[in-house]
Image 1: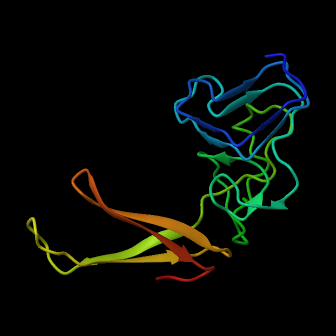
Image 2: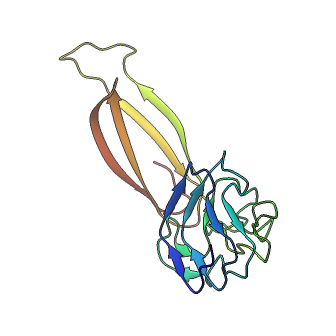
Length: 173
């Protein structure tokens, strides 16, 4: 409240009762943050009645959700689409949290990488201690940029193995 000329970046605001609240605050720059507040209070993800800036110019660099550009923020309830596969939303702009950001909004909302697990195949349906199990997982990257995924295999709650998988643009493995 009453906070001016600040930069707010690289934060995760999740399951907060009010998200980010900018009452009577002006000329703040808010970008590259992760907002996920589905049951937030009056403002949900954000409430802003001042003149603030919710994105920077699109700039090369890894953003908070792993995309190749910095721009705005990730919003769990952004309903637009990334039409060109660059990791930034192109429709339903600006994001304004259904009017809770009263002046402008986020013109470059970040979107999650468009990847999918396309199949999981095992050579057995049950395995006992001391026996082996082969697991083949196919993952597709539908983005126009490379994505690094972390694949973790569990037995109940015990981690068996974690492996990083790098997928170049528009490929699968």
